[in-house]
Length: 125
Image 1 (tube, rainbow, N blue to C red):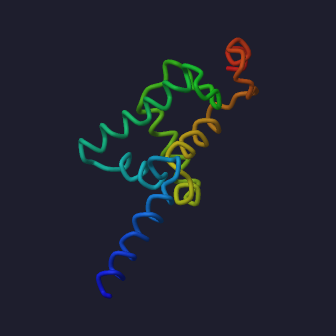
Image 2 (image 1 turned 90 degrees about the vertical axis):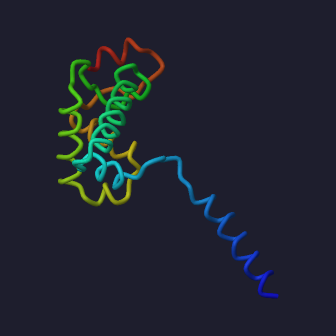
């Protein structure tokens, strides 16, 4: 009987544990922790995460922010950290991608959300 109960509990955790995974791979809290860390690995992770997100935006994948193409990783990090400090609730509740989108779109807003024509995007930045 005990084996059955243990098996059912294990199955429940396996099923419900996997369904609670969200589309956001990293939490806002996790991104801020890595970007705030002094460890070399975490610094590199942060730079890669910020850079890949910004490159996607510059390459018009997202079109939610007009990040200038010459913006440094250091500037991206400072914008993120400033936003996180001013908005701690967002850090707790948003995914990493949502947090970056919010921080960067507040710093470099775009007038257009039309992502069907790249020329419209280019004119709004």
